[in-house]
Image 1 (cartoon, rainbow, N blue to C red):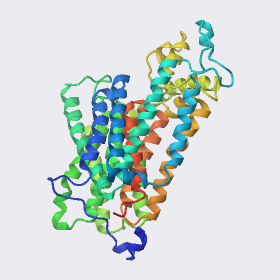
Image 2 (image 1 turned 120 degrees about the horizontal axis):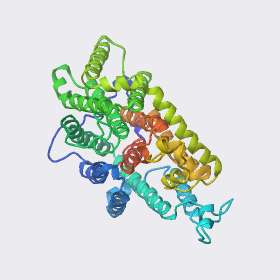
Image 3 (image 1 turned 30 degrees about the vertical axis):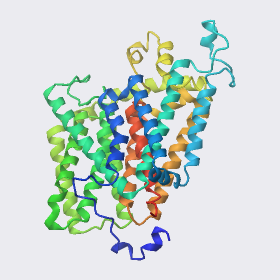
Image 4 (image 1 turned 180 degrees about the vertical axis):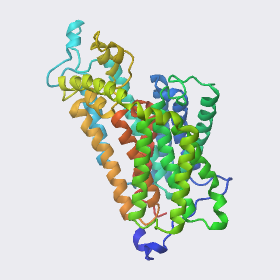
Amino acid sequence: MDEASQDLRPASARREPRAPTRLWPPPEGTWLALIGLAPIFLGHWFYGALVSDVALIMDVAAALTVAGVLLHPRLRADLLRLRGLAWPGLAMAATVAVALLTLTPDVPGGAHPVWAFVGVSPGAATLDKSATVVEIVKLLGLACIFVVGATTGASDARARSALAVTVWLSVAFGLWAFFASVTGTVYQSQGQRLEARFLTPNTAGTFFAILLVLGVALLTQRLRRTSREKVAAALPLALAVLVFGACLLMSASRAGSTAALAALAAFALSQLLTGRWKVTRTAAGAGLAAAVGLAVLLFVAGDYLVQRFFTARTDIVDRAFVWGVHWNVFLDSPLFGEGLGSFESVTKARLTDGDFPLLWNIRAAHSVYLQWLEQAGLVGAIPMFVAIGLVMYATLRGALRRNRMTSLLYALLAVDLVFLLHGVTDFALETPSMSAFWAWLLGLQFALAQGSSSR
């Protein structure tokens, strides 16, 4: 009997299970969540795993975790019962296959001209063979991280525990980042803007925007099912939201803050449309309290963010110039691109006296979509976009079909929205630990959308 037929009560009478409150022994799924998240957060700590050695270690850890999952009977059964894994898996495999093909000259147009220039035959379609090989390994690592997330999300209890672990690991990271920023004990490349260990405040903005959305979702869920006498039980989550909001504002990321507000609005709309939130006097008071809290945060930590919105015009002009240069690169090889991992080589090869001040030290195109098109071409980028779209579609379909855990599913879709929106104008997903974090969350939501096994 499926989940919907087991619970015949009206929607207004159904309630999601209470989150476990005990500290020891840890709730189900805590250890699996820690095993999956530890390499990712270590990647965050080691500068976003921007050094390939760190990223590859993170990927090896994920592969070993997958091996452990396959050896564990219960976890293996949970993973194998998931439906629909083949389609996003095939799309991901297509991207890897295209990347492997670019290591040869056997593509329309043949080898990249640089190989003939340096006298290497037969050459390859990619500009940088070694960088492409590393990126292929990273893609396989992301696939393993997705599988770890899916295994974690295959049980409702494990998924709930995993999101709690995510929040509290992030609170620890955020508190460190906050105090390190205000005391000046960590290097910040752009003065007063908080960047944690990501080496750029905009990536920190993406990270804390994600956690703000997730924290608000968990907090509202806790408040909805908590009696007035036990509202104090929600205070830890309220403090977590405060930490994430302060760190986001201190990063002064305009697009990150905008993406967070859009994602929160989308989440709120989903809760209103599904009837989980009611427009009542209590809800209005909560909304007013949230507005006051946001105003206080802006007053305390958001002055620089507000200033940056007033100076956005200059940055828009600079970004548009960078996009124009790399759009022309894409048009030069629209089908198979310049090769995964070739961005820096392409940029340096195209430097001129006129664009040197803007291009000489950039690590990304400030648009994840443009960068993927430039490097993988249409043939390589479209399957990757399709894989992500299939996972999000499966999550939305599960949220519409399930009776439990739907608030968390809509929250995870809102988190996806942060990644997608901020990716238009920035490059957080080109930071390996951030792409790994999203892969884990995508796996978690894909499995959670199907519900717990019927053990």
